Amino acid sequence: MASAGPRQEPSPARASAVARHGKLWLVPAILSALVAVGLTLLYMGGILNPNGNLRHLPIALVDTDHGPPLPGQQQTLGAQLSRSVVSATPVGTVQWRHLSQAQMQDQLASGKIYGALIVPADFTTTVAALTTSQATTRPALTVLTNPGLGSLGSSLASRITQSAAHQASLVIGRQLTAQASAQKADPTTRTFLGDPISVTTKVGHPIGRHSGLGLTSFYYTLLLVLTGFVGGNIINSGVDAGLGYSDNEIGPWHTRRPTVPINRTQTLLLKMIMSAGITVLTTSLLMIAAIAVLGMDASHLPLLWIFSYCASLAVGLGVQAINAAFGGIGQVVSTFVFIALALPSSGATIPLQAVPGFYRFLSLFEPMRQLSDGVRAILYFDARSDAGLARGWGMIAIGVALALFFGIAMTSYYDRKGLRRLVPGPATTVRQTP
Image (tube, rainbow, N blue to C red; front, top):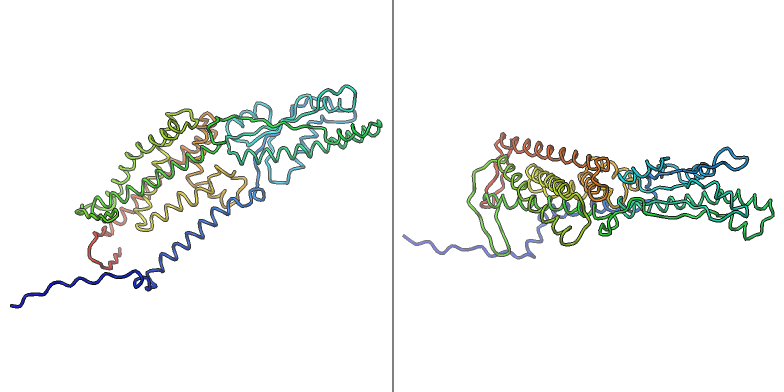
């Protein structure tokens, strides 16, 4: 009996030859193009025109002027200035809140307003004295900022408030100039009276020096999301390789482990349990690196840790559920859910009042806005529940519940329909149908 000849190995393919197959290019090119266009529209669309998109930015207007009104006037100059400030602001851009001093301090401390304009108690008296020889001081208004809401939001409110105060000063100046002209005042005096009010800017609610001008809450939240997102995908790949449902390749090293018979639901539960355990480590190391090593200003450390852990875990569980439901494209889907749509709608760098309405809609449910509000409340606003912490906890609970429900519901459906996970093997095309 003739012996069989040596087995002929197929010659290795060359990249140039394989690259000529159009179908190989089709899916990666379409998906890459959609991702590029989608990310560009999402990110750039939210930042290009904050002034034009500005809607109802909350700023306090505090009138403590006690008068008495000037002769022939029904109201104090403080009341007149308040009306001038509101009328000098484009309609719909600012939500002027007429508050008392105590209410203003409370809303600054809870992050509900981006700044404040304060009219002093002796405003009318000081302005009236300018046309007499008894003038000793120049009338002054105080602008307060709230850097805990982010440097851009605070500076935007400060610029708007200062501009409105200047316009109001010109209105009052015209009255004083007319009065000075009737009294035949010299030109220097009339010029001074044309814009008589000075504006002083102060920090209304201070934050720590190592707070990144109010940006540490955003970047810390971003770290929590990325830790949960990247960690979830690492766990997903590692478990699949460990159970023998995918090959493990590191450089030239390739391993394939024996397949463990396990259904989709049990695999998802395993990944979620591992996410819960590993997130303890990653959250602890994240806080140590940010606070102990880099010196980030932070208080309420036990609360910050438990909130950070729950926030990162919620993201990790969401990633596991999406990967279990969508398979190979799960990472792309979770990227848009937790990163692409979340960043521009977080309101942490640009106020939500200064972005298009689409992003304000996304902010109602996108996780990063909710987590950022909670972190900001802990870091800058004394962990007040009304500063965003209560909303953050509520949305974490909803996110965990949705991840568990969606992931288990989808994998249970696949298991009931007999859609087993396939083991790596020879090249075949397999289509499973319910």
